[in-house]
Length: 564
Image 1 (tube, rainbow, N blue to C red):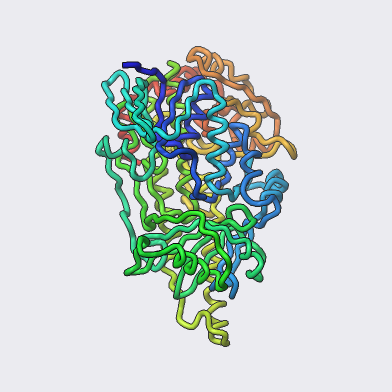
Image 2: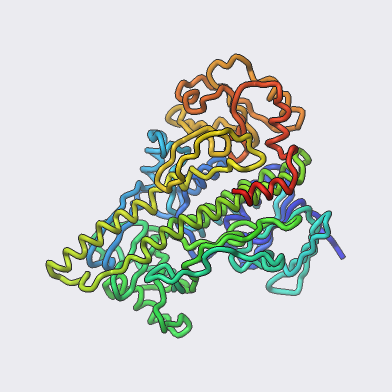
């Protein structure tokens, strides 16, 4: 039997798996990725790339490539609510186009000070760029059309068997670690007998039941709709509620409606599917049906474990969202970033294996947080029911539309203006964070107060109109030396060198940064999380051992997660 050896095997070629392959391959870790699909996604799937995800893409060097994809640069990314798309506009939450986002980002301060702003682009486009960059790495082997059929963790390695979907070819892989990013029906998770926990399917007027998804081409849409274009288009009426994302700004759309009681997608012909779309438009537009499918809304589920021995879970295999707020794909990317640097550190010998237990300790609580936020958004829109006569051409109908518009505008702002969710995730209880005693502020979706207290995203500023603070960070660890400290951090630098940490030292004398970070020395992890801040004290060696996981046990990491 011919056995192939890799450091890490990844099952699943969606955003999580491809992002992880990029993180590992760039760190000198050999990776093989399998996905049973013939290629990256054809259907649009997720459509909202949050600012934090875009910051990670910037860190990897291809944020501009992502921002150039999808809709035209000047296409509005508004969220608009209608009775039917061509009839009555109820409300609109305005957001900048890709061009405006790029122009404005360096002028923003406070909650929205970021290296990148959000981008509205279908997941199908993002996956292509992630795959392209992963395949360009010498140590990464990307294999679509291969199904992992079995695996065995023998304690010192994981033996993986993969079979080609189109023929009888079989490959056997021996890897140090296996990562399951194979979606909601994850073979890896089920084989490990790891269950989801949480809300298994809430029933609502909308966003709570089986959803019918259509990928369509309809250029006539922009001819018959008398309102400005929008990225997200929501139909709100008693007959057929729906949400629809613009895919290319030219006439391709990802349309989703909830099946009613008694409706079965298998009984709906393609002609009937087109009529469902036309009903939401409110006009008999010409439609080309590109694909169709179903999915279940109402889920807020998180796996009871993210790790079993040498096997890990991430993305939809670890958490399942109702896509209100667009949080599922973005949470998956953060999973990959967190796990990526830790796996690399362990594989390359600069950190002990117990560091890997902090992946679950840090990311499981964030998955619970984010699924909870998404659930609240789904409840807000799904439980708000259209009233009778909303579509009437009468004074009473107009009054009902104004009432609905006020609610929907407030909802849209709450769901899509979310700097707190985007930037506010924290790992205060992690055993590899040198946590401080500080008063924790309320975790709100629409409020984010930048803080350099260890455990959160490093506060951001623009150094000039073109240079983000993050552009100065190293790809691995960074030591910020701010202002004119009484020492130069030599003890910390020496401790990092002793532990073979790849450290970039950044010297900045910027008053705003000194005020923001409050301490002259700040140690920042590869995922741009503050690990420690302070002065160059004599226990620098202990600090560095702590952030690498050399002072903890696996049991302590798990206990920290359970306590949180």
